[in-house]
Length: 272
Image 1 (cartoon, rainbow, N blue to C red):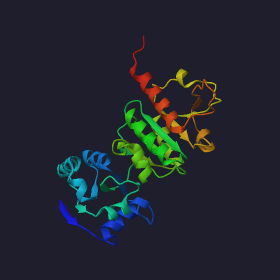
Image 2: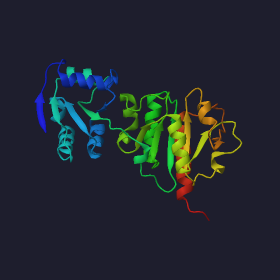
Image 3: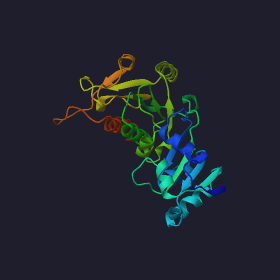
Image 4: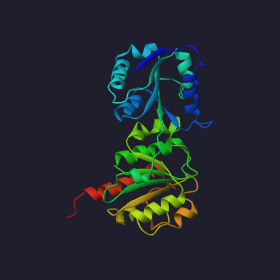
């Protein structure tokens, strides 16, 4: 690994990192992993890390030394380790209190056809999910539930934005997250014989009465409008999550957890 010290915000590597943070100007080929936990998760996954920026104060800590040691053990080490003053690192950071280390990670093209699905695939489909915190949490839940992939349809927010990445808590490195159009999704589901299921408070069938042992893709819609008509019209069925209190609806990330883990329960709890 090459290590250098930079003191100017006008440096090319700093400019590249800022562009990765904003995800604008065509720089959607990189994203930021900010903070020691996310950088360690990236290193543990052998993600293609381009540069790592850190402050001198951070690498003098026990945690900082641990993270740099993990980076040095990667099969493909970062191309560059960059020491920055705290005020320059703050320009790259997307948080009010930077944690002292930020990695620039290459975003490799992803395809569902590279996903090794189980015999009964379990997939989360994000259809117009607009809040990056919700989308990141859905990715985290999908990872925890052992889902095969998270498909992000047009109209959803960027799953690789800094806020979404933080909400994944590192799960972005563990589960396949794939941008896809509607036609590509429908073709894939048909080819794999996967049922697309939407949640609807007015559905006659309860989630808990549904057969989720078969291949299933849960459609998770926009926070205010739900799933789009094009998706709802192609769904194999609709289920409702029972609401016993006075709440009108559930947060989409909460709904994703309930749906995915009901599928996990049905697939893992022995039948009597």
